[in-house]
Length: 134
Ligand SMILES: [Zn+2]
Ligand SMILES: [Zn+2]
Image (cartoon, protein in one colour):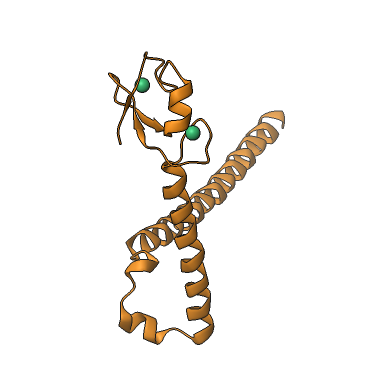
């Protein structure tokens, strides 16, 4: 009686585990499908040319709203780029005037004439002295 009950329980347990395994396998398949879907989305996104390479024909297919949005995004990006370029050329000491002095012998180009004249060391590498570029 005990043995029968025991073996029944064991079989039931095995059946239960098998069912759980099947459920887990289904979940794995589902997760894999989801993963592949995401991978495809990423690949599609990466294969898409960047918006500044969109052809005139593609642009012509866009709605006026889309074009207006794109235009304002481009204007914003353009001024960001201009700002970064001009900041790159600013004196790292005063950050007001343009760089125009070349330090020697390190050849760092990071200062305006006015700031460089007050320094005895290059502000980037701390090497002594500087010379005028212009
Ligand atoms: Zn300066
Ligand atoms: Zn230097």
